[in-house]
Length: 113
Length: 114
Image (cartoon, rainbow over all chains, first blue to last red; front, side, top):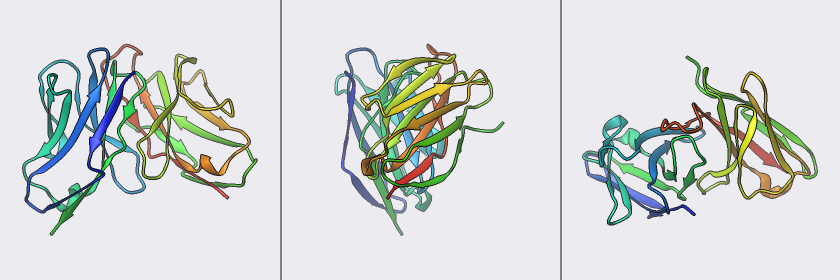
């Protein structure tokens, strides 16, 4: 069975500071990993995906994530936070791109001016 | 091109009633999945349909059912509604079943049970 653990239900950073959102996964098969962002009253928007190619994945809005098999991690980073980054972020795992996703509980990112 | 569209956007029902939620996938997508997102939690998988056949089912009671139509749109039905069914219901569409392409989500239907 697959599972995802997101460390920290709420992360607060200052505008311009580094954003680091943590995600650890468990999977019995080579995983596909995703980060989605959810703004209030909206659905999920894909930020980036790892599908067994390059371990450093670049996504939209300046976000990137690094797949570390030895640590079973897929942490999301952004060098400089912007006010518009305030949202809920979800890490998810699946065994292929179009198979059921298993989500973490989410991390709410607040950006302080 | 239009994204995944869901209707209605909001719905209020009372306990014991029945509800039908609708989803239209991205043009060319043949797979539709349904997820339930309870407030403060991550989405949980309910069903996946591909080419009008059920390809996966999550750990939900038989009160939940779904189907996919020839045009690949889908309906999620929930019978005998409980207060705990209050949630955001998300639909996601995808391409081929074995594709490495990710799913794309709609904005969801917010279901409130009184």
